[in-house]
Amino acid sequence: MFWTIHMEGSPCTLNTPAVAVGNSIFSFGQACCDRSSQNMVVRMFNTTNYRWSFIETKAEEGERIPDERYGHTAVAYMSKVYVWGGSTQDENYFFRKLCCFDTTTNTWSFPEVSGSIPRGRVNHFACLVGNLMYIIGGFEQFRPNICKEIYALDLESMTWDIVKTREKFPKINMKCCFAVMGNRIYFFTGKLHWNEITYLDTVTCKWSTTFATGQVLSLRRWAQTFVFGRHIYLFGGRDEIYYLDYNDIQRYTPETNEWKAVKPLGLAPVPRYRHSCVRVGARVFVFGGVTRYNKFSVEDTQAIIYTNNIECCMDVNVLDLCPSLRTLCFEAIYRNNIDVSVLPDILQSEFNTVTRKFCLFNC
Image (cartoon, rainbow, N blue to C red; front, side, top):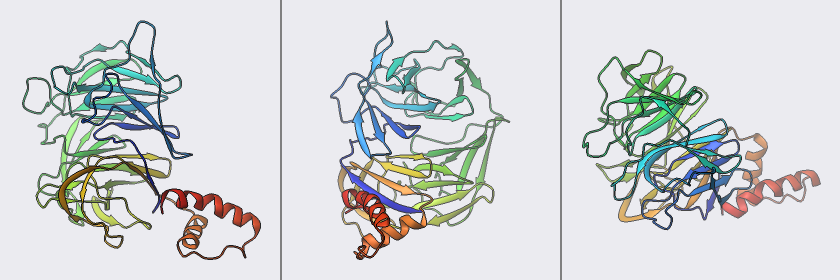
């Protein structure tokens, strides 16, 4: 693994859902402190040229663009993104109508659904297993406790169903993070420490809890995960007991039920929490969130003592999961300022193309 690119100038995205469709990343909504738009704001990040763009959206005939909201979720299925839930900032209205964004036409629609339609929720979890979108946890209006009813929407038939589980609903909340691998939805609850892992088997509808071996992770909240190969990776998060933020990467292997620290090459991003972490192919894009860092040391990529100054992270960081030997060599040449004039012209040209990203974004 190799942190290759750090780019400033990203929009402030805080608790805004982001999903990948093809080679593009779509972000839905604004930071909770931004009230500049009454309609749902859609931004797209091009993972080829590393540029953000504001998407001019439209609605199908007779429809309207969805209202701006907070605490909602987004799930990508084929070329469409399904946005559900959330509330107005004053929490006077909780949304329950399914919104569909077609990324090929930049058009919003509201599909007709049937079945056991859930009430509107905020700060819930949504994920895709096959063609089913699961809604887990969150809060309904006028209900102070977390919702224990689980719903699944079949994105082919547009039918909602209640998922009846065999065990008691676990103690998960909005500060947890989750990942989908196979037919299981893993929740990293951090009730005692991150070695306690809860998962839902979507085939048997059974909740299970396991205690992972290996490295003991400190309690942290608002971290983000991504899946690659046989592993689930965790990045960032905040320790609310010792007031530490993290920018490390931890790897969990379900087959062996083991945690292991991973130390990529390159300069890690600023520690953060409530950020986005989206994988596109063999690259992971980390952006947004907030940080309280005071001083950041290149040598120390673990937790750092923070001040009370909260700042939005307005950057994009790229983690190459499978860097080629050529990329690693070019980066070493670039970092050590080695003369490339002795290289063949074709390699000099390729070197200039590859390292132009380092020069523009990672200086």
